Amino acid sequence: MANFRTLGEHIIQSQAASSNSTGELTSILSCIKLATKVVNSEINKAGLVDEIMGQMGNTNIQGEDQQKLDVYANAKFIAAFKARAQICGVASEEEDSFIAFESESCRGGKYVVLIDPLDGSSNIDVNVSIGTIFSIYRRVTPVGQKAELKDFLQKGTEIVAAGYVIYGSSTMLVLSVGDGVHGFTFDPSIGVFFLSNESIQFPQTGKIYSTNEGNYPFFSDGIKSYLQYCKASDPASGRPMTSRYIGSMVSDFHRNMIKGGIYLYPSTTTAPNGKLRLLYECKPMAFLAEQAGGIATDGKRRILDIEPTELHQRSPFIVGSPDLVNKVLEFLDEG
Ligand code: AHM
Ligand code: MG
Image 1 (tube, rainbow, N blue to C red):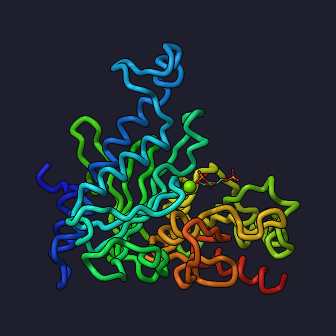
Image 2 (cartoon, rainbow, N blue to C red):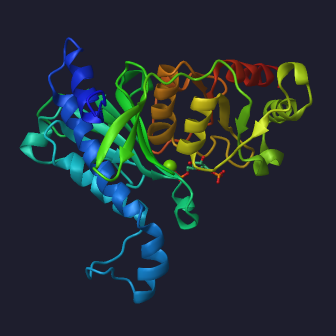
């Protein structure tokens, strides 16, 4: 075990290497790690709870009320953040508004956290991978006051750290504090995340495209032409490409980042702003993508440059290997 590096060691060492580190980010990331373990343990029991214990009524074996997992994950992450004096507030995809922590110690916190506690949660019932997505920003309001909306409506270029957790065949936490993207795989037998994927880089190009092609009739002409291009036979350029769509963005993104690929949730005639949430889903993944050498765009703008105006704002989202994203942008320019 001597050469094994844990997530905890990585966080401490990466922060120690940063000249202005005060240990506060270390504490926040440790709190996310802890909440992830709690949520992971519950997710791994999902089939049991639904199919077996669920038949006993609405209480589990300890007599506690059963909760939907996304509600459970939301509650656990928020409780963990509230317990850290470094965090003055949280905004969650599961909450109508942001939560400004009231206690004096939390008002002294310098950071806010934005979270999608359980992304792709419609996949839980069928035992398909789901994820958690988070991002951390320095507050812009004075320390000591309650957090305000403007603390959460910052451009993605201001992200201090972001990451995701995949609850898949293994549970992985993938993190960037601005020094590249590193993946940690959870060993459930001892409850430790070990560094498994150091300095992950999007391959320059790839063969995989991921989108919900059921929406094809509602796509723009540019996206339709791009999808035709993906499917056209041209052995010299490696086409047709391969279609892979889990419907769980974290998992689709993760696979594409490792193997080379592109994920698209573009605007449609029925949803002109797309489906995904700019703050909770697009910006953190865009930060990670760029840290891994990829590109993230809404089709017109770099995602990290978009100035948010609302907490639950949606955005078209195209992310992946640079050559593939640049190619779709050519089609959009023409379309
Ligand atoms: P959610 O936050 O309600 O779970 O929605 C986000 C998810 C993404 O993970 C996934 O890529 C997308 O929605 C799938 O949407 P669709 O079923 O329309 O293809
Ligand atoms: Mg989501």
